[in-house]
Figure 1 (tube, rainbow, N blue to C red):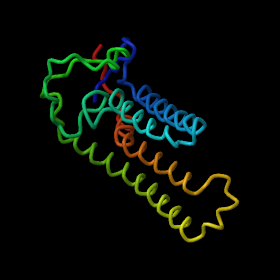
Figure 2 (cartoon, rainbow, N blue to C red; figure 1 turned 45 degrees about the horizontal axis):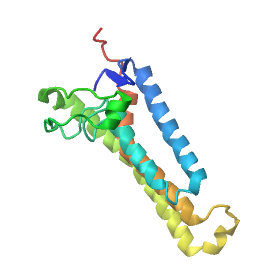
Figure 3 (cartoon, rainbow, N blue to C red; figure 1 turned 135 degrees about the vertical axis):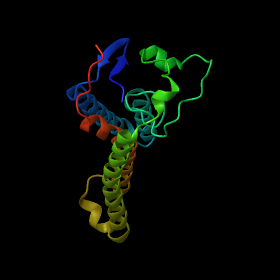
Length: 189
Protein backbone atom coordinates (compact mmCIF):
# COMPACT_ATOMS: atom_id res chain seq x y z
CA UNK A 1 0.00 0.00 0.00
CA UNK A 2 1.28 3.45 -0.84
CA UNK A 3 1.76 5.92 1.99
CA UNK A 4 0.95 9.05 -0.01
CA UNK A 5 -1.49 10.25 -2.60
CA UNK A 6 -0.86 13.06 -5.06
CA UNK A 7 -4.01 15.14 -5.47
CA UNK A 8 -4.12 18.36 -7.48
CA UNK A 9 -0.32 18.43 -7.37
CA UNK A 10 -0.26 18.27 -3.57
CA UNK A 11 1.05 15.27 -1.67
CA UNK A 12 -1.37 13.93 0.95
CA UNK A 13 0.03 11.66 3.67
CA UNK A 14 -1.98 8.42 3.75
CA UNK A 15 0.14 6.69 6.38
CA UNK A 16 -2.28 7.42 9.28
CA UNK A 17 -5.34 5.18 9.36
CA UNK A 18 -7.57 8.21 10.01
CA UNK A 19 -6.55 9.80 6.68
CA UNK A 20 -7.30 6.59 4.80
CA UNK A 21 -10.65 6.22 6.56
CA UNK A 22 -11.50 9.82 5.73
CA UNK A 23 -10.67 9.10 2.08
CA UNK A 24 -12.95 6.02 2.08
CA UNK A 25 -15.79 8.01 3.65
CA UNK A 26 -15.32 10.85 1.13
CA UNK A 27 -15.29 8.41 -1.79
CA UNK A 28 -18.50 6.66 -0.74
CA UNK A 29 -20.21 9.94 0.19
CA UNK A 30 -19.23 11.36 -3.20
CA UNK A 31 -20.48 8.30 -5.07
CA UNK A 32 -23.74 8.34 -3.08
CA UNK A 33 -24.22 12.05 -3.83
CA UNK A 34 -23.46 11.40 -7.51
CA UNK A 35 -25.97 8.54 -7.55
CA UNK A 36 -28.64 10.77 -5.97
CA UNK A 37 -27.82 13.65 -8.33
CA UNK A 38 -27.99 11.42 -11.40
CA UNK A 39 -31.34 10.12 -10.16
CA UNK A 40 -32.64 13.68 -10.10
CA UNK A 41 -31.35 14.36 -13.61
CA UNK A 42 -33.17 11.57 -15.41
CA UNK A 43 -33.87 8.69 -13.03
CA UNK A 44 -30.72 6.87 -14.23
CA UNK A 45 -32.22 6.26 -17.67
CA UNK A 46 -29.12 7.56 -19.41
CA UNK A 47 -26.92 8.69 -16.53
CA UNK A 48 -26.68 5.33 -14.74
CA UNK A 49 -23.75 4.46 -16.98
CA UNK A 50 -21.97 7.62 -15.83
CA UNK A 51 -22.05 6.34 -12.25
CA UNK A 52 -20.30 3.13 -13.31
CA UNK A 53 -17.66 5.13 -15.22
CA UNK A 54 -17.17 7.45 -12.23
CA UNK A 55 -16.69 4.42 -9.98
CA UNK A 56 -14.06 2.98 -12.30
CA UNK A 57 -12.30 6.36 -12.42
CA UNK A 58 -12.31 6.70 -8.61
CA UNK A 59 -10.96 3.17 -8.37
CA UNK A 60 -8.17 3.95 -10.85
CA UNK A 61 -7.15 7.29 -9.33
CA UNK A 62 -7.58 6.72 -5.59
CA UNK A 63 -8.16 3.11 -4.59
CA UNK A 64 -6.15 0.93 -6.98
CA UNK A 65 -6.17 -2.85 -6.81
CA UNK A 66 -7.58 -3.57 -10.25
CA UNK A 67 -4.93 -1.71 -12.22
CA UNK A 68 -2.17 0.82 -11.83
CA UNK A 69 -2.76 3.94 -9.79
CA UNK A 70 -4.33 4.40 -6.41
CA UNK A 71 -3.11 3.43 -2.97
CA UNK A 72 -3.50 -0.35 -3.20
CA UNK A 73 -1.02 -2.48 -5.17
CA UNK A 74 -2.48 -4.25 -8.21
CA UNK A 75 -4.14 -7.47 -7.10
CA UNK A 76 -2.63 -9.47 -9.95
CA UNK A 77 0.94 -8.69 -8.77
CA UNK A 78 2.15 -7.75 -12.24
CA UNK A 79 3.78 -4.49 -13.21
CA UNK A 80 2.13 -2.59 -16.06
CA UNK A 81 3.77 -2.66 -19.45
CA UNK A 82 6.17 0.21 -19.93
CA UNK A 83 4.89 2.76 -22.40
CA UNK A 84 6.57 5.72 -24.04
CA UNK A 85 3.18 7.43 -24.44
CA UNK A 86 2.44 10.38 -22.16
CA UNK A 87 0.01 9.83 -19.29
CA UNK A 88 -3.70 10.29 -20.00
CA UNK A 89 -4.93 13.88 -20.19
CA UNK A 90 -7.33 13.52 -17.25
CA UNK A 91 -4.53 12.36 -14.95
CA UNK A 92 -2.40 15.30 -16.04
CA UNK A 93 -5.28 17.75 -15.62
CA UNK A 94 -6.01 16.50 -12.10
CA UNK A 95 -2.28 16.27 -11.38
CA UNK A 96 -2.57 12.79 -9.95
CA UNK A 97 -0.07 11.12 -12.27
CA UNK A 98 2.84 9.39 -10.60
CA UNK A 99 5.61 7.60 -12.43
CA UNK A 100 5.29 3.83 -12.27
CA UNK A 101 7.22 2.19 -9.44
CA UNK A 102 9.80 -0.50 -10.04
CA UNK A 103 8.51 -3.94 -10.99
CA UNK A 104 9.50 -5.43 -7.62
CA UNK A 105 7.12 -3.01 -5.86
CA UNK A 106 4.13 -4.69 -7.52
CA UNK A 107 4.72 -8.11 -5.99
CA UNK A 108 2.80 -8.78 -2.81
CA UNK A 109 4.29 -10.65 0.12
CA UNK A 110 2.39 -13.36 2.02
CA UNK A 111 0.88 -10.92 4.51
CA UNK A 112 -0.43 -8.68 1.72
CA UNK A 113 -1.84 -11.67 -0.14
CA UNK A 114 -3.62 -12.84 3.01
CA UNK A 115 -5.05 -9.34 3.58
CA UNK A 116 -6.17 -9.10 -0.05
CA UNK A 117 -7.89 -12.47 0.11
CA UNK A 118 -9.62 -11.59 3.41
CA UNK A 119 -10.80 -8.24 2.00
CA UNK A 120 -12.25 -9.94 -1.08
CA UNK A 121 -13.96 -12.57 1.06
CA UNK A 122 -15.57 -9.92 3.25
CA UNK A 123 -16.46 -7.67 0.31
CA UNK A 124 -18.15 -10.38 -1.67
CA UNK A 125 -20.25 -11.40 1.32
CA UNK A 126 -21.72 -7.89 1.13
CA UNK A 127 -22.18 -8.19 -2.64
CA UNK A 128 -23.89 -11.55 -2.18
CA UNK A 129 -26.37 -10.01 0.25
CA UNK A 130 -27.00 -7.16 -2.23
CA UNK A 131 -27.62 -9.65 -5.02
CA UNK A 132 -29.97 -11.64 -2.77
CA UNK A 133 -31.98 -8.45 -2.19
CA UNK A 134 -32.05 -7.83 -5.95
CA UNK A 135 -33.22 -11.39 -6.52
CA UNK A 136 -35.94 -11.06 -3.86
CA UNK A 137 -37.11 -7.77 -5.36
CA UNK A 138 -37.22 -9.28 -8.86
CA UNK A 139 -39.12 -12.30 -7.54
CA UNK A 140 -41.51 -10.03 -5.63
CA UNK A 141 -42.10 -7.98 -8.77
CA UNK A 142 -42.85 -11.07 -10.83
CA UNK A 143 -45.16 -12.69 -8.30
CA UNK A 144 -46.99 -9.69 -6.85
CA UNK A 145 -46.81 -6.74 -9.23
CA UNK A 146 -50.20 -5.45 -8.08
CA UNK A 147 -48.95 -5.26 -4.47
CA UNK A 148 -46.35 -2.71 -5.54
CA UNK A 149 -48.98 -0.11 -6.42
CA UNK A 150 -48.42 1.73 -3.10
CA UNK A 151 -44.68 2.20 -3.75
CA UNK A 152 -43.97 5.64 -5.31
CA UNK A 153 -41.14 4.23 -7.45
CA UNK A 154 -41.53 1.35 -9.88
CA UNK A 155 -40.02 -2.00 -8.98
CA UNK A 156 -37.96 -1.89 -12.16
CA UNK A 157 -36.39 1.38 -11.07
CA UNK A 158 -35.70 0.07 -7.55
CA UNK A 159 -34.13 -3.01 -9.09
CA UNK A 160 -31.98 -0.87 -11.39
CA UNK A 161 -30.88 1.33 -8.48
CA UNK A 162 -29.92 -1.68 -6.37
CA UNK A 163 -27.94 -3.14 -9.27
CA UNK A 164 -26.12 0.19 -9.73
CA UNK A 165 -25.30 0.31 -6.02
CA UNK A 166 -24.13 -3.32 -6.09
CA UNK A 167 -21.80 -2.54 -9.01
CA UNK A 168 -20.33 0.45 -7.16
CA UNK A 169 -19.78 -1.65 -4.05
CA UNK A 170 -18.35 -4.65 -5.90
CA UNK A 171 -15.76 -2.51 -7.69
CA UNK A 172 -14.61 -0.53 -4.66
CA UNK A 173 -15.22 -2.52 -1.48
CA UNK A 174 -12.14 -4.80 -1.33
CA UNK A 175 -9.80 -1.81 -1.62
CA UNK A 176 -11.88 0.25 0.79
CA UNK A 177 -11.72 -2.57 3.36
CA UNK A 178 -7.94 -2.72 3.02
CA UNK A 179 -7.62 1.04 3.45
CA UNK A 180 -10.03 1.02 6.39
CA UNK A 181 -8.49 -1.84 8.36
CA UNK A 182 -4.75 -1.40 7.85
CA UNK A 183 -3.01 0.05 10.90
CA UNK A 184 -0.97 3.26 10.72
CA UNK A 185 2.04 2.95 8.45
CA UNK A 186 5.45 4.28 9.28
CA UNK A 187 5.93 7.70 7.78
CA UNK A 188 8.85 8.06 5.35
CA UNK A 189 9.48 11.66 6.44
